[in-house]
Length: 419
Image (tube, rainbow, N blue to C red; front, side, top):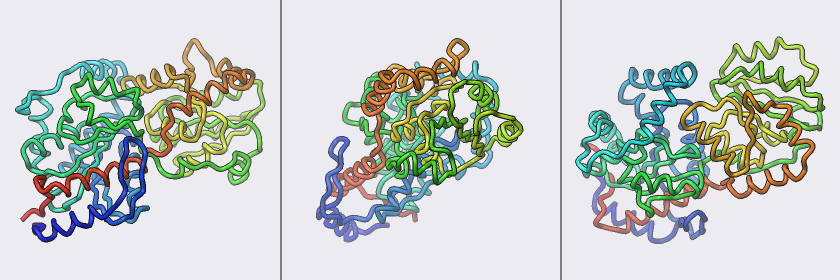
């Protein structure tokens, strides 16, 4: 257990300075705190884990301690596999069912104050087990990247089990089902202030909302000239299109390459197939007229974006945030029903993307990008208006500010080690 003396010493240090959060901007003060943060995630697609990893990297760069922890994997390997594989199966092979289930969950109301919703009852055992680990780890704050964990953390706080700052991060350009259960979360981070009304409709308080953006790795907040990026990749210095299928390589990527190759304009293609080895092999076997750099899984997406003039992608929240930070116009294709369909709507409504479907072909969209300078300028202005390239640093500042607020208030207990 942390002693009263230790608590007082820590409060004195925190009151001496740090980084303060000021509603989306950071204000530097003399640094005097070391933070220990637990970042909770759940593997359902890779976006939640990638966001968690970006947050961890930011804290580590500041010299603080942070650990990413998959809550379901800790509680039960069987549960972890069910959620992981179930999400991939339903989102890829049962899209109509996924869309209907998402819409039904989207319209639900939060459970009662006594925690009597199905989701809260179902997560009781998970909460108990996870609470034990959190007490052993004794973090100064918890950041989580999946809405299921909003239920768990709310149960922890309402039971007075753990009383430290808790921050939820919404990883899409919409507010998922179950965020209405995160009633005791101190701050809920959203991609843009334009999503504020969605949280308010779910009963989340105004003071809980932090519209600072989806956290991304620092490499996406920086840019290098296109000519240099292309040279580093061994590409020609000409118009470049980046095609991404997501971490799992969703969609008929080879078919998209063939359709792009048929466009008469001269440009080169970078295709990223993720972990979809079949798609990569299919593209490798194509005899294209255009130059195609075909990749599987890669950790150099930031460099690929720097080299590109436009990105063709399914609208995952993290990829979208990274592309916006790099000021890349987005061509949407193959969105997963549910959250990605709503991401697409957000981007289209705000002028930052165009969408290809059975009525609008790649050639039609590509023509606008290469023959309509006014449309391209509108793209640039729209992207500048909604991009949040400093989201991760702002989250860091927000976390430090919340820890300082908690630890300067003796009425709020600090985390204690389990006996």
